[in-house]
Length: 590
Image (cartoon, rainbow, N blue to C red; front, side, top):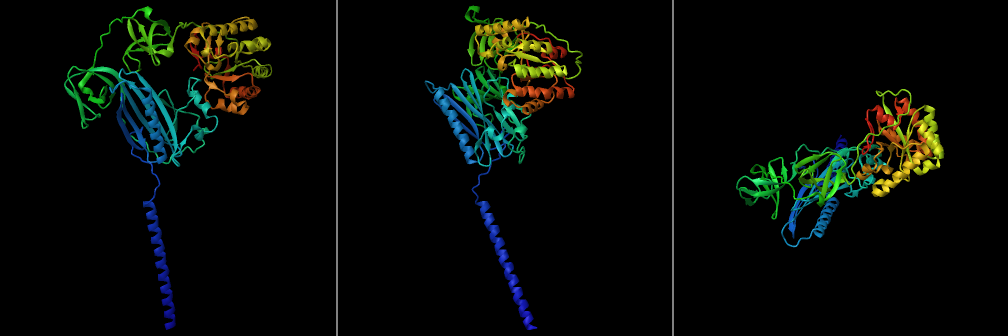
């Protein structure tokens, strides 16, 4: 009996010993883990949300004056060393550029330099930063730049769009950009959305997700419902209503840094929706309560300028005439397209003009020395049986031809299914292959693509006139009449081109098949399919590629099966209720 008790006692001692050891191991593990957590050196992202535009980081402000330049720079500190160093370095570079570019003769402030930012959490642990740089002088002329950056939050490195998207994404982005000369894309990732930053506005991009290399998900929604103060650009003079003080910041609790007397005139740079006005002065940026000022009423006098002081020009479209060279200044008049104005100066992208005894500013890009004539282009509508305007229709267009092999195959397909298309041919090739051109005109219609495929935007008035003359002569020699439609090479059209083409409608496109790039039937068909509903749209293709002919053999029956009527550009315009005019660029018909 005693031996049994002794054995049980030994077992109990061993059990308690094992339990004690396990507890020691657990305690050591817990303490070790706790110490590891407390003592970690891992950088953590800062979330100190200020507004829905500043989702991440801590707002940091640099305010300074150097020589004649006043600085107020807002930038984020996000808590990740590599990203913070990158941002600070960019800020220093931008500031140095301003220092080197704007050198004054004394310490009187005449340049105001501002940087503000937006920063967003993006998909798959990315961070989007937008820096907005604005340079103003005391006379309120302005320079504005926008810079965008993307970061990988896992390693803090800057990444490019090529790191996020697979090959082909740039072609999707170009659909949103009107100028073919645009080289740099400003893309911002906000949550799980992807935006193109274009002309200072955000536009959500459709059809880009399939090019993503990264997963379209976000760990957490860091967006905020906090409304950011809205500061609207004013750039006008105001009269002070009474003796009042000026503040360092837009709050009555900030430092009082000066005062103004009743009836003094101050220049208001911006105004907020919270009742504050920002002033630019020789002492820097100051703030006054908006209730204490009222806009100075200008007495408009007839300008001491004559017609002989400027250049006679014409408006290419309806234009707003502003009191200053910015779109937020006072609207003086609305000038209709084709009106005559006198250009008496320039300021950046603005032209200073005289119109109706007033002097003001309009967009320089929409003025031309040649008056744009708006007159109807009488279209040739070849018979194609019954076309039902209530049913969807689409126009196939083919550039750069004709070609013996590929163009002939395209015509065979059109003829097989009894449908029409529009061919924009080069004058030089029309003379070489007249029989193919005549067949194009019989099956559909033929427009001109100029004589030798020159970029019309880069030609002088004389060179443009000659290029158009050669194309018309070639066209008339082959078909016996002059063209009614023109497709400009590269889609390039400026005001001088619109003014110089006085007898044809200018036709571009709103569906680019990218057949010239892919040279692949399936990729070309897939590109067209990405545009979804094609009703009223003009599809761009090229009749000089065999791969395009392959695609057309599949595309035509597929469109017919989907209920589309395949028509010429002229038919599309006619049945959609459009009268085509010179001086206008058409991209499609709704």
